[in-house]
Length: 462
Image (cartoon, rainbow, N blue to C red; front, top):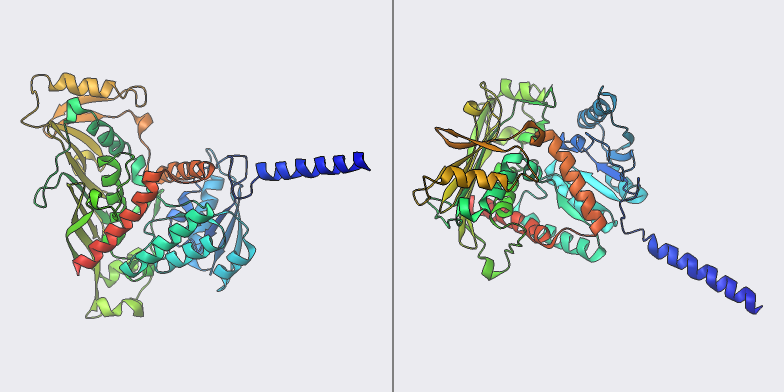
């Protein structure tokens, strides 16, 4: 009997130990341990995370949606990746359609990570339901679109922290090579000097982007849902695209440093903000959406039944640790000369780091370095080349060429990826966070600060 008791006790101890090692709430990076849920995929970003396979992600993705053209577009994109000639993927969508798609997701809890990219009106509700169910969240931006939702987001993130869940949004622009190099070179004091603090009239760091409703994505003409033009469903630009630009400003100006809006020492403050309209004719709206008439929910913003006045543009200036940053987002119908445009400048005491993306650059983001009057003009070329050489172990082959816009940084093709490919990098980083059990502290805190700023800008613009 004594021997049997010891055997039983040893077996129980072994089983308990194994269960602790296989903590179901944790991730180890093992093959297929991540099971994706894609909830109501109404935006093409929901499909872009499927551009590639990931060893630790099970190829079966559980899709819950009300059905309709948005779901069809998502499934078509997944199929496009699965059937391409080079490096086809192996995704296997298991789809549930019905009006009860949210409660069905909660009831079945088929996956352990929810991806959400679509109509933003209910996004924070989706995020909350996932967290309450014990499901991690990878969300498209923006997570919220109205100031009333900010305390709800804060509570959701705190609940996720308590449960050991990882919640983050898709900040693709951190993986754009010119943004990376702009950040890296700003840390080289011999080249850049120190960051200027700037002022409301002349901010130290500026991010301006112009987007277009009618364009091509992944080789296909982008068809946008009609609700995309309802600011109560998509959100105004001041709380939407601006999330990327705030994220870049914090990420570049204060690398791996938490900037806490609740901390007086970080001095996070909105200085000024404004919004304005973009006009779209009914024929332009139909070309973008495939819908002939403006839906009823847009009619309050339609003039003479023919022109939609959409609050599609916004800009604001904020301050963090005495650094003044400016964010500006504009939307137009289409660009006959090419694609979206972008401008960014980081002002240093010895050099300005400037990104241009316009017709002169064939709409390819290009980084320029411009010496200030305080720089050593005779030695500047050598200082710049030394700075590029210091990055050679990570980004080999960088070179500088003088132009009318300053010293252009030439980047080998091997370091350049498309916007679509950046979603793969975002997903890979998120998978690393799952294994680590949390976001880095700076990223977790700055996530809240980012949405504090967007919602503060929304309020001030009124």
